Image 1 (tube, rainbow, N blue to C red):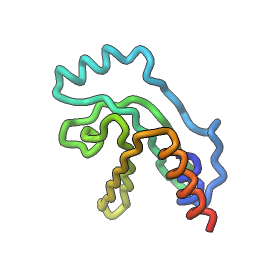
Image 2: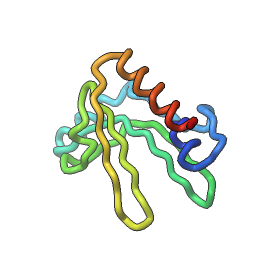
Image 3: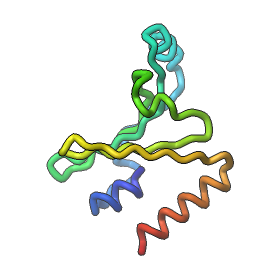
Image 4: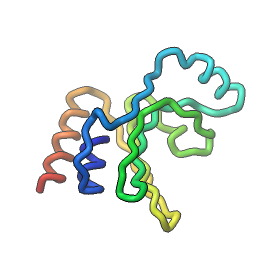
Length: 113
């Protein structure tokens, strides 16, 4: 997320700049989401407000209609929202750590070039 944020926003963000909340002790959140017909997903967010990046990673409850609700197991997804209210949603499936590492290396190479 930090690498992508730096590339897209020409920033110099560091991992320490990310507000992180893990997935421990979220059983109540998961149960509440289930009762409300929702799902809990670990969501990374980067928001550019007045040329200052706000980055966070935390579990969030999403509606079943949200594209992220369909992302499961080895899948990953990215959603880009624009001021014009348009959005782009991209998914990919990585079934092994090696596949994920290769994809990250490929992305870093493209960003660097």
